[in-house]
Length: 464
Image (cartoon, rainbow, N blue to C red):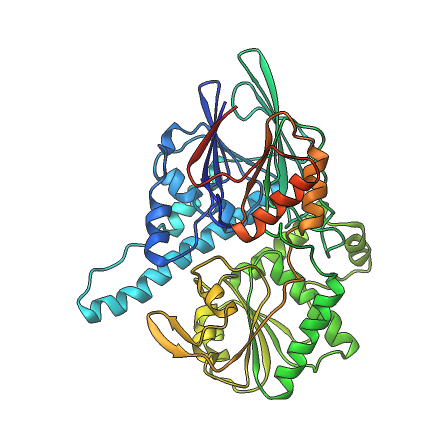
C-alpha cells in the first residue's frame, strides 16, 4: 500500500490523500486549495494523478477545503463512487453548487475589469453545472456501517464532531495476505460544543493520519469566546459601527447565530439587526433541521421545546437575494453582518468588506483560522493596505479575532486522540496543519514516548 499526501500537507487547505492498494486507487478527500489567486487556480485545476484512474472517494465532511474540488475530479474523468454520511452528502450538494456559482460570479466580475483593460478573460475554475454532476456519484453511508470502497478495503465512518455529518474514517486493508488498520481523522471537533455530538476517539490501529491544525495550544473555554464576542459587538454598536463577520456558512455561522440569540435575549448586547447574508447558510440551516440524527442531547432538548434557538430569533434576517445584500451597504445604522466565505476569498463578504473597511466605527471580526495568503489572513494580521477585487483600500476599521470558537480540537484533545490510536507499528502522520501547529504537536507526542511521528511534505509518498 502506498499513501500519497497530495493536499493539506504542511498547510491547512486542500485536503487530498491518495491510497494505492490492491491495484486500486482510493482518494480520501478532494478539497480546494486556497491561497494566492494564480497559484490557487493552477493547483486546483491540475491534479497530480489521473482523475479517471481513481476508483473511489471517501469524504469526511462537506467543508470546501475537503470537498470543493470534486467537480473538477468528475469533470476530468472520475466516475466512481463518493462515500459520505447522508448529512455530508446533502451539505456537499448545496456547498458545491454554491462554490460553482461563486467561481462563475467572481470570473464575471473580474472579466468586466479585464475587458476594460484589454486583458485576457478568465475562465471559472468550474461551473454550477460541473458541481451538479457530482451528486449522482455520491453514496450515503451511516455511521458505524462497514462498506467496501475498493477490493480488500473495509471502511467505516465514525463521529468526528466537527460539523454536521462529519466523520473520521476507519480502514482495514487486506493486501497480499497482510492486514493493516488505518485511521484517518478528518477534522476533529471539540467536546461540549453546541449542536453536535462529541468526537469519538480511535481504537488501536497500525497507522494514524490525523489533523494538527491547533497542535500548538489547547483552546480556551467556549465561555471566554462568548465573553469576547459580546464585548466586541457591544463596543462596535455603541460607537455606531457595523460588525462584519466572514464566516463559513456551515457550522460556524450557526454557532455564531446561536450565541447572538442568547446574548440578545438576556440583554448582554444591544438589540440590533442581525443579517446572515448567505443563501448557502439559509439552505444549510434547512439541512440542519433535516438531519436531527446528528444533534447532541442538549439540542434534542431544545427541539422538544418546539423551537431551535440556532435557527431563528426576533431581529435575525436571512438574506437571499443580491439586491437585499446590496441594500445593506447603503445603510449607516449599527448592525451585524455574517457572510461567506470564511476566509474572505470569495462571495458577498468581499463587497461588505469593501464597503466598510475604511470606516473607523466598524469592526471586522475574524472567528476562524485563516489560511496563508488569503484576504482573511491579511486582515487577521492587521495589514493596513488591503486589496479587494484588485482595488487598494486603507483599513480604518478595527480588526478583532476570536479563537475560542474553533470547531477543531486543541492540543490537549489532539494528544489524547493520537494516544488512543496506539499507532506504534506504522506511525502517526500529521496533516492539515501549518508548521506552527504541527511541530509543537509532534514534540508533545515525542515527549510522551511516541517517536514514529511524521510531518509529510506535499506530494510525499509513503509505502506501508
